[in-house]
Length: 201
Length: 261
Image (cartoon, rainbow over all chains, first blue to last red; front, side):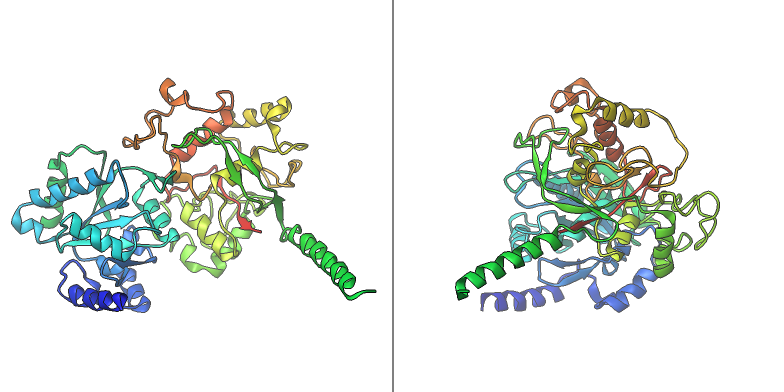
């Protein structure tokens, strides 16, 4: 029953969620058509299927159309992820209003076991993430491939932790990697600049 | 004969048969039985040994003629059609055409200039997978006579010799004797992709994350945590893997497949 209420609520919420641009490809076939029009270097060529924190399937080609900030993380991370997500939130806040409305944010979790759509949904609430954020739960292969295209190094460590590089990636509206920034330096200046350039293109 | 005795004899036959069929590797593959891999660096919990379950490994690297069958069956992986995100512009650079390897890529040589994505797609097509670092290193640690070649100076010398020889020309696979497990060319021919090539994070302190690269790799501080400072080939492979991206296609980098028992 709880699950049913959750999924009903999720679908309702999703209808009102601007960050979710799923209309262009609801199934694998139309997704393939969208992918066919994307550049070969687009991250959205990936064909793994993820689930967002509203319980809906997300295919990469459906994310095209907006400049997108992508971060791989996991919600049980004790060290770097809280900072990394905070940095992305700072970046969101630092964007001028007219630019901000044209940018989407995506968090994809390494932790396929514990970061279920439900727990990612809790994470959204805890961290007060805006509706422009998409939180993604995937499977092992999907995580492996996403990390591979983004150039994120990661490794399962003890006690449910992951070692991983701290990378913020900016994708252009076609999903090509436009800029990557590594490290936990909380300055967002160069990220803001890159995003402004991309949005104005 | 009593019923129960017959039962036990039957069971014994059955388990013997099962054990026998389980130990027969698929065609072209060798059984690498379970054992221990000692990673170059201890993990965050200080563990210096990783248990490797028994698995099958291709006896030989995937050859150009093997790979030609793959691109024939999977046009998306032909060199003119592959997506850049999955393979950079050097993909099958030494091939003359989509379905024509040509003189620079002889059929019985290891296929190289293939990305991690391409290697993985090939393995999936074969119903196999890429080996992990632990599996690959476990297999490659064997000399011709022992699963652990570390105690064999001749094995160590020969392996090292290849690692310090720059750009040896591509040679045919299977020309040298098999190792203890029956696998050949794990060294001496080409580098090989592993599925977790991008897991090489050097962590000197347990809480330290990758500070944006592996700058600490070759400095003294980084090497302090290493298991065996004499294992130069292991350092070479570690460094090489750390430098790779998943769409890189390199002339000296090929792959072979693994499979669960």
